[in-house]
Amino acid sequence: MLGDKDISLVSRGIYTWGALWVAISLYLVSGMGITIPYHQNLAHQSFKVPKWLEYSLAYYAVLSLQGSPLEWVSSHRYHHQFTDKLRDPHSPTKGFWFSHVNWAFDYHSRFGNLECQLYYRFLHYTYFLHSVLLGVALYLAGGLPFVVWGMSFHMQVTFSINSICHTWGKQTCDTGDVSKNNWLFGLLAFGEGWHNNHHAFEYSARQGLERWQIDTSWYVIKFLQVVGLATDVKLPTEIQKK
Image (cartoon, rainbow, N blue to C red; front, side):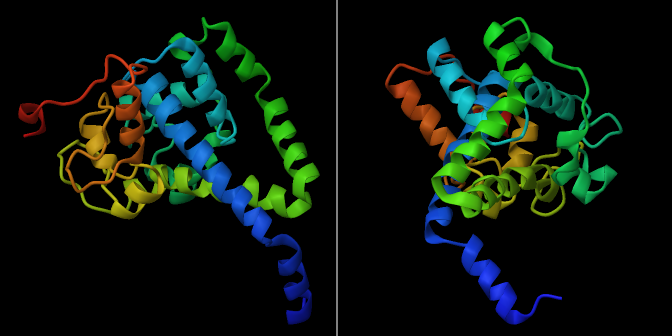
């Protein structure tokens, strides 16, 4: 059994200020990587960007350790097609922990229209290698603390959208499922927490539809639109929102 002294020594060895900054950095990079390229650009085609930018952003999402672009996008499309039903790949009806994390290990071949692009096939078949290289780079930079914090901390926020935002929160739109708006994860997950809004208007590049609903990913997309990099940005009309 570990005593208080032993636990204190382990804690001092794993939890360092440097590791905390690594965790925050990867949380920002991979979190934005999931919501902007994987979710809104690739899965829902809510906007378009030049291929060089699309591919660059997609690689940031690979660092989230939640799967290749092919698998993530196809799983998410199934989620919307069969929301909270038997074929939903991360439904809370299969249990909270399944929707939180186990779905990522439930492999099916449903790649959709991205498979025709060589870059995405490359990332898919070499995905494990990129994950290993990230772990090695973190270990060389700061040892075990960097690996533990850098490869686990950020995942919990994005995983929580599938579990918490289908369990706790407020449902303002009748979407025929149990999706919820959760203000806390609206903040932590760069707008993804406005999940009921998203299920009501899944094509929308903006998930925080009300002025007071903070949606960081939308601010980034809007900036890209202003500078001419994002085009065909899709939003619901005021009539549709009513």
